[in-house]
Length: 219
Image (cartoon, rainbow, N blue to C red; front, side, top):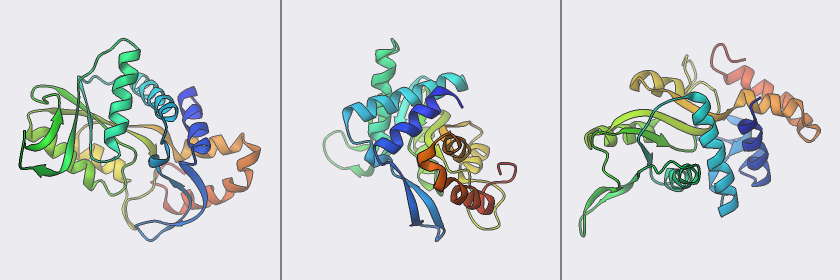
């Protein structure tokens, strides 16, 4: 497992962004783990997380000119990533959207750098159903930007719905014709659990869940 994946999973556990137990998801499935990026709630945690995102993107080797954070969780994630790139010597423009259009002042739904003519990287935490990401891609195209890719923290690697053949991330990637890069995946979490005595009791439950809901070819 590459270092950024290990650093991310260690950080997620320390911040309690990654928890184990029994969690009923919006889909109705009962998951043995739950991920909530809202628990990366300090400057130090966000800075470390942004470093993991940047390393994952470097490993993927995709090109982009602008960072876009979909409201709401994508906004601090994209902002932290822009700060990390500036620390590394690359000053990237940043934009994000409002959930509702503003009727006064400058108006509109977009805030930040103009998207027109730029290759845009969408920065978010997860892709669950894919609805929010599809809306973000439509917003980017309407503003003249060209979606270049999507980066997320964790890919659960599970079918989007019972009977489906793809995960939500795979479906969005295929529809949009752009890559979806994950800092870590459920497969990485299983590998991480293999080497962690503290997670040894969780591994069998993770494996059983993946066996039931994992996308074809991933379990």
